[in-house]
Length: 182
Image 1: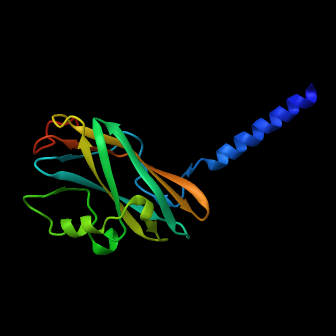
Image 2 (image 1 turned 90 degrees about the horizontal axis):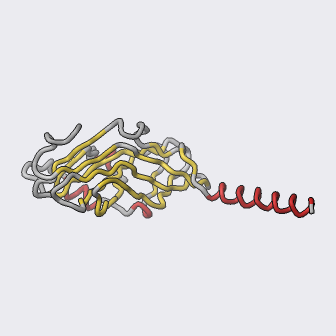
């Protein structure tokens, strides 16, 4: 009886070890803004356009970071469209927020949006800062929509990693964020 217990215990340890090996670890070479949840809020009024948010991701490692996926969650969110701009830093077109179409455009919106690649197609080379660019569609357009957790799954140097962006991004109905609790 004792032998069976040890065998079952060893099997449990092996399974737990295998499962832990499959889970991505946080804190890898791909770095976004590492802020605590709820400490930073960025708001963009929707007006008549789509609000896009940009968040830099820098590969501080020695190997390429191959993105696997990027997902977002939040409140009153119907969908989040996420793309990666691999040329944002060298083009000088890093954004915080931008609305498109816009009454007063920056002049490069269409170029930036055309450059976006799907997260699973993005490879960020060592030393490069790329940019996540995303838009939020609200379930109820009369209310604000907030994304408060973006998870970027990637592999680098044979390891699966996870970078979490905990900045809160909010789209507000109308032309102002003045009524938002910023």
